[in-house]
Length: 127
Image (cartoon, rainbow, N blue to C red; front, side):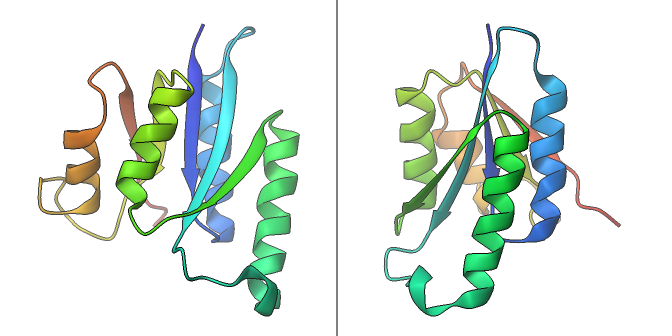
């Protein structure tokens, strides 16, 4: 049984990440949709943010998943902790704007800190 975690942002194109995670699933697998935002961000004052979260919630529901939204100033540690707590076996993330996956960028740091038992799947950006 796989536990799949899909890491999304508030952008509508994150639907492709949810779809990708869902395509990885077999019958007994579970999927978790996660969005981490800065601890000082105020959801209530931004109608565009609310619309984006509603969109993500609907897409998560369609995928048979819950949407978890967390506030944190350390996104990587938060994702790694969630992966451990939920016994995640596959983590799906979108490719960042950085050209190289090395230790000096978000994906490189995530790969370094993530438990080696978790397969990190990087979905290329749409062109």
